[in-house]
Length: 462
Image (tube, rainbow, N blue to C red):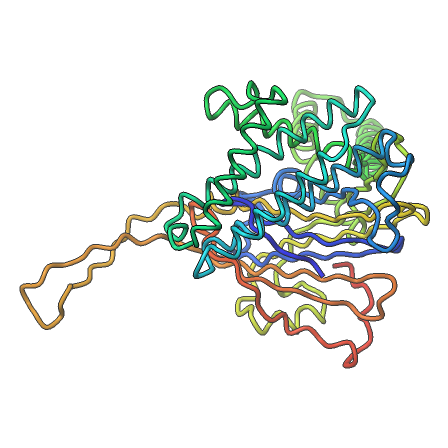
């Protein structure tokens, strides 16, 4: 199952861990409140795939039961050292992000602050207990040490700015202050202070760059191959052959009947060629899409960082459909929350095949990130206002004016089918979007059949 996290005002991130080299299929359906015009003028399929949806994979390090001693010489060599430390950083930042989300939901900040402080101390001790010897590893260690110190400080400083921090017991507040002072002294001793100086925007951009450099050794390299290019060329060549054959037949037929080439005939031929050039691209695209209906649009080769060893292959489908065109099982289940069958649905499907040697030492973390900003831009700003009297029993009471924020509801359905499972599983969330970002994201019942109630449905080209 996937874990959903919010990243900023517009981003949603779904993550899970792949532990065995099997075939994994993920289907994502985004039910939009828009109807037929959504796909044609607002957000194209290719634009959505390359700009709004990110499907990536990263190395998470060895599993707990298979993890060997971290002082083993195997992990002290590059690139294993960078992969190991990068996986540490990912686990740490993921835990801290979950604690940061609790700032707005818990009654007291004592628990998330105490846990964040404990995680930061543990990570610092684990990272700094030994310094690498190779120059490349020393640069990587320095960048990670600086970024961790800054990230931990930002978490604690953010918690101190919240109103609930005053209710935290004095001992915990003192521990936070001591940790911050220790970090400042450590930076001074290690000559890190220059990386923390400068304008706030410059410091933020510098730390963001460090984050990308630290994640680079753990991210699997992807090479996207567009499928269907050969079919499009074949359709284009066939259409050209047919049109030229018709014109040749027409000219020979006109000559055999004794007609002379006139300006009117030449004008008709030129006009026909112009109409052909005007409509040819649309005709070729339409025929190509019809021939490739139900087939994958992209093929992605995932390779190991540094070694470029092939780790997995991924096939990707993406298309817009109406709710009434969905597969039978999905249509039956979605009718419980979809009332308008003309609603546009963004259908994304990924089929991943991991090589048998893919998980020899590391687990793989799968990430699905959805950028909702293009969807929010389509909502627009409203100028409507709601007027409410302060006291309805007093005719002379003042009137409050409440501006209305336009919002739209999306349904996000995620279906997972693994090779070792007989049945598929589904998760569903209700997204409420406004022009300023994600207003609400709540888990909902997908009304999906339980494993004992059915056999897995055959693939219906979803």
